Amino acid sequence: MKKYIFTAVCVTASIVSFAQKNDATLNNVTETYTLNPDGSINYDYSKSMTLHTHHSFFSLFGETFVVYNPEFQKLIINECKTTQKDGTIIKAPANAFNEVLPSGAADSKDYNGLREMVITHTGLEPDCTVDLSYTISGTPDGCPTLDIDKIIPMQGANIKEYNIIVNVPQGTKLDWSVTDSNVKPVISGNTYKWTFRNIPAAAGDYYAPASHNGQPRISVTTAGSLEEALRPLTVETMDICEVPSQILEGKNTSDEKAEAIQKFIVENIATGNVVPELTGYGFRQCASVLESAFGTPAEKALAMARLMRSAGLDAQVVVAFPKNLKTRNIKNISQYLVKAGDKFYGVNKTGIYDAEYHADRDDIVDLAGNPVSIILTPLIIDNNVAVELSVKDGEVKTDEGSVAKRGSYWVYTIPESKKGIDSWGIKQLNSHRSDWFELRSPITESDCFTIKLDGLKSLTKNSDINLENEVGCIRLSIENNGTEVILRREIKLNKSIYSPAEYPLVRKLLLDWYSPAFRRIVLK
Image 1 (cartoon, rainbow, N blue to C red):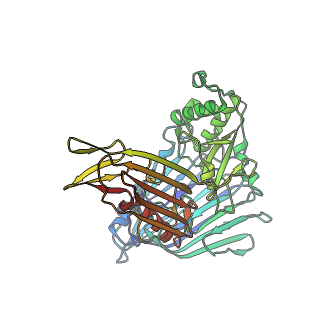
Image 2: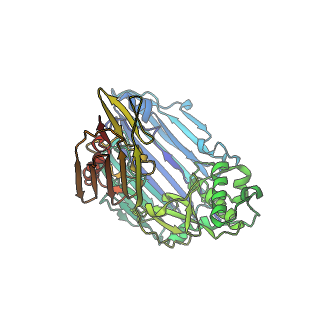
Image 3: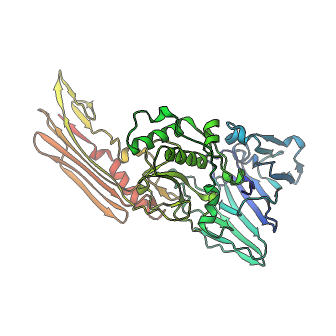
């Protein structure tokens, strides 16, 4: 198989959600991808960025990181300078460029040849401008296709202009799509140019979708079909690879075997953050993964499927793509999974991957590019709890929930659900958000608490809330029946991802759900 490594560029250091949106301004970025007739690919990158605050250069943009593979690529720094506010130009000294081993490859000798160039920008002060330009040239024995997947907004910096340029040989078919933007390419001969202008800084809101809904994103590939794009994943060697015998001891059913093999992969094989373009779209096979106890998500999935097949299971690797992406390639795969029977298994944590809960945000396909049919299904929680309150030595006791004394009164609070919305840990619901809003799954939850008072008297009046809107509905009620109180809580949320326009509707339902008014009763 041809090998080509294409760099993954990270132009920021660690970015935190509380960074100001105007810490910096990205004046201009141009990324140029050139596919040459001999199959080699050259990549040219240039940027001009004005840093407005100390936070921008101490925490966000003081360094640029370029990861590449010197076995297949050559990195050339064309320009690196800082123009201070008074016009003084400071060129980066030689010690501003330092190569290190990428952290994602640190645990595997097979990837110790990768390099990360750490570029430290010098002479930084508020309102200085950093200019950087570099080239990565590839070799003719490159990857099967030219793939691009780029999310344009970044946290901490507004963008004035962002250019993506693609040059291809005569007759090369280019498949592309842009999500959440009306930008179209300007085509001149065999050159395609997309220009994004005036892009605000990414909001960094909590619970934003992993698929980056709402953010301009461009995907490009020269693969003629999805099957061709995924073909590098289908290469499999003939090496012998079997499950260690002790792993399957006492495991008799197919599900037990699959779960045991997944547990072995998750707990014994470290996950490496080495993206496919840094491996030339080559994937180490099962024996190498087991020997090194290290694998990328793709390699771990391939190894897991191989081990499951060696145990007699019908297992195959499948991949998930964000549903909102039309042009798909290896770079924008969101999940590597193994399908064994009718169940899906991930590579980073144990347990079944509930694909039906993600069907409104993910499309799953096999490695031939064929869709795997998944029907969106809400998480259904039906919880009935009997609670007994008893008075002993002047204290109110319970085995469910909690009781607190308030003067001459007692306040009983129901327990949080261990499987429903309460377990999702949503603690912050801002009144306004720019990002889309993602929940773990659609859900229909019904909780009923029958609280026996045992001589106590409820001072909480009967009350109820019934609310329905475009995204779901909620019903909350407290009903006094003499010796017992029945507290009912029902909610339905129709999907996983909500636009900023829908957010106030789902927020209202969640705020009512979390309200303490329908979680506690006052007793005397």
